[in-house]
Length: 206
Ligand SMILES: O=C(O)CCC(=O)C(=O)O
Ligand SMILES: [Mn+2]
Image 1 (spheres, protein in one colour):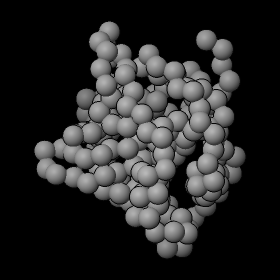
Image 2 (cartoon, rainbow, N blue to C red; image 1 turned 180 degrees about the horizontal axis):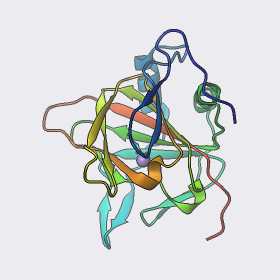
Image 3 (cartoon, protein in one colour; image 1 turned 90 degrees about the vertical axis):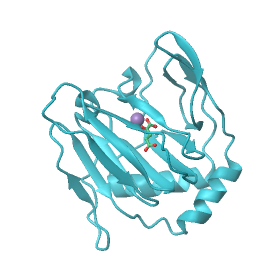
Image 4 (cartoon, rainbow, N blue to C red; image 1 turned 90 degrees about the horizontal axis):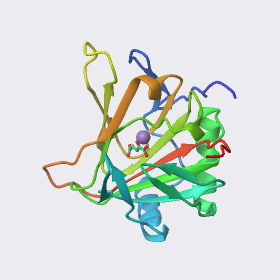
């Protein structure tokens, strides 16, 4: 593991959140324009709408998703079998690894088609992510706010972090232990957004 690279233009910033370790690159250079990449990923990914179990109830996730990488991943009662790395995902992984100094073996793509799609508040704290997971989250398309809430400290205000196209957020250290995060549905019309979360899954037997 190396320390994150400090860039000249649009360099990385550390977000001042108690009990969290968050680094944000506001606009990373991906060597291609964000909109073409968004369209390419929308058109070429085999999207699924997963049926999940939340508090014992079965429902469809309000978004589409795809899991690529080396190992399967289980959460909310579902098991995602990995699809192979595609050239475009491999290249994005290489760029994200080089910026963050972390290694990733998987990526979860989330496709928020419009304002009716979102993601409930959660922590990425599955056992196979390890004790202090580093998760790198790359956004494309419409800006949506990542809502962050401290798990136990009522004196910590809810944070709304806008994630514009080309932004890269690294969540690491104790962030998942102390904070939950999610993407609210919106009341105003909103175009498509894709978020790619690069993760390192550890081979754990269940
Ligand atoms: O869409 C986002 O920015 C959040 C995605 C996320 O939290 C997840 O995939 O676990
Ligand atoms: Mn998450």
